[in-house]
Amino acid sequence: MRPTDRTGLAIILSLVALTFFDAMGLIIKHLSSGYSAAELSAYRNLFGLVPSIIALWSSRAWRLSGRRLKLRQWKLAFLRGAVVTVAQLCFYASLGLMAFATASTITYASALFTTALAIPILGERVGWVRWSAVLVGFAGVIMVIQPGGTGFSLYVLLPLAASACYAFVGVTARLFDDDAPSPLVNLYSSVISLIGAALIAYFWGGFTPIASVNDMGWIMLMGVFGGIAVLFMVVSYRMTEQSNLAPFSYFGIPLAFALGWLFFDEAPWSTLFPGALLIATGGLLIVWRERSRSKTVAKLH
Image (cartoon, rainbow, N blue to C red; front, side, top):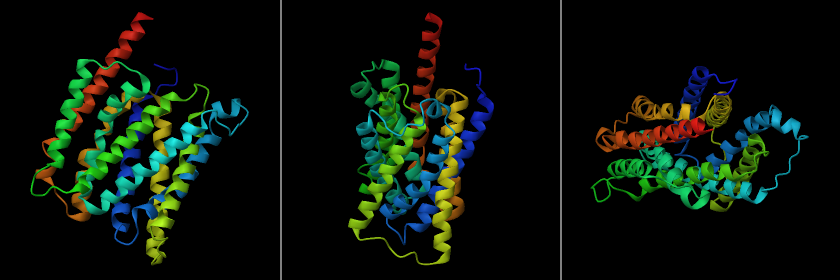
């Protein structure tokens, strides 16, 4: 543990961040009938610059480096921003086409994709425990997607594609130089995501005029909620190890179900269960294995 480790407070902040992320998703679903996923992504990224700039300005590592804005691996940062754009488009589109809880739950497959992508990208060796966890998790994904079922639609592949993209972004974050400040890397991604989403929205049919003051308020609130979530998540990750927080992220599955039922009268029991439980089980097995490996390495040193 680090001297500044405050795991309890970090867990609370991460859960608050998760709640704000879900609140942002609810607003996106509410606005999706009048605005395209690309438009909503552009607005989200515009507001997302605010927490990125605040996080960078408050970064001690960035100040010690002379407040440089140049990244040696800027091409990788640009690539990650482009992938984030695709992830947001897929996820935001799915929120307008599917039950809120179903779309949100499928994105939790990102932990499974992360394990699979770590092999070709990072050269990691994945043992039978983690591969078993991946298989369990993907069995859960298949149960939620229900390919071949009467209710199957290609729309369910959108949040799955989003989870793969988010996993790629997470894995490639480990390729940056150790002295590259994380807030600066995130700022690069935010700027590229904003540009990408704005261009897609422009060529997809242009920006729809904001219909009312209410819609403007919802759009601003969407950005504020997303910004608060990002800031809280960044702070929580600085307080403790990510492996300490990962198990609590699955609190988002019942939370998404409750919020979808409360605000949109959706209760997709037959779609989500027991598949959602297998997705969470697979993810938690991966977390457990990672923590076991970390403890073993620490003892050897």
